[in-house]
Image (cartoon, rainbow, N blue to C red; front, side, top):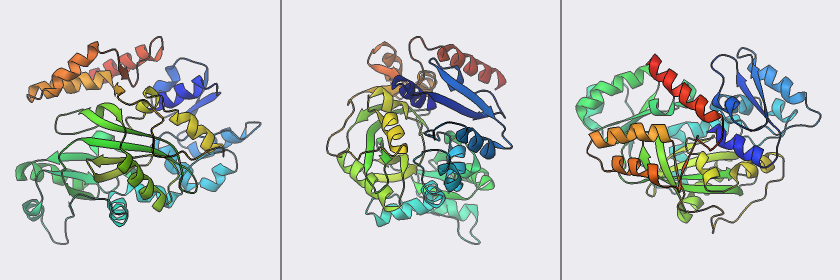
Length: 365
């Protein structure tokens, strides 16, 4: 997702420094085309080294925390970071609230949004008893999957009957506090907003999910830019009500609120593909130059399709095995010129490194 942030910043003529911990493989962005400085910081002293790096510039730089862990660190040490850089970051309590599925659901209800039925295991209640009153199909999800450091696909599971519930719920509960939520049928939508201090919106993009990693639901592999004026207003009111600032994506199924992703989200490259200028608006807002825009008209191209090619093709196989015609659409999109990719861009050296990393990952599996 950060590739889109990097590419738009470079296209706008900004000097970019990419920062990553030194406790794993270098991130994909390090191999991207364009002139950028790449820095690895000690994982053990990450906060201190990041503060030192930011303070080493002649003028305070703009900080765009793209990773969930970095965002949490910056929010928790907000005043320290504000002393050495310019940024648009929520307070730690606001970030924690948006990441807490139960608390943000309650805020959404107070804001007048429709929310799905939700259950929790009661004191003394067995898993069998909870399975008996669960609304099938339902979704198992962690109260705060971000805090557990899990990948998006690991944070929830759709179960359609009692047997599947009894198999999956204990494994979820063993990892962290778990919610049971009624599964809402229909198309999934996302409203991505750049929230400014004072509650204005600096940029926004809406999308419709076309395909996911598996037919039963998962991370989006293909989406399309749309305009949802009612959901935009509702999402803005929700985020403004909790005092959130920065980029966030509010998820809906139809008109039903699902959750908030208070960070750079999985379909972020659509903001670039649709020409929204979201990243540039984020940079300006972080520098204190953000201007609110009206919500009545989109400032991006509608009908733009963005996919993650490899994930989408792997998902197509699962769709076809399930007898779902969306698998054929994923294959036919190979021949549609208007479909843009979230990673691959012509001539970018990152393409070969991405393919290599996928092959190495499959070998390890």
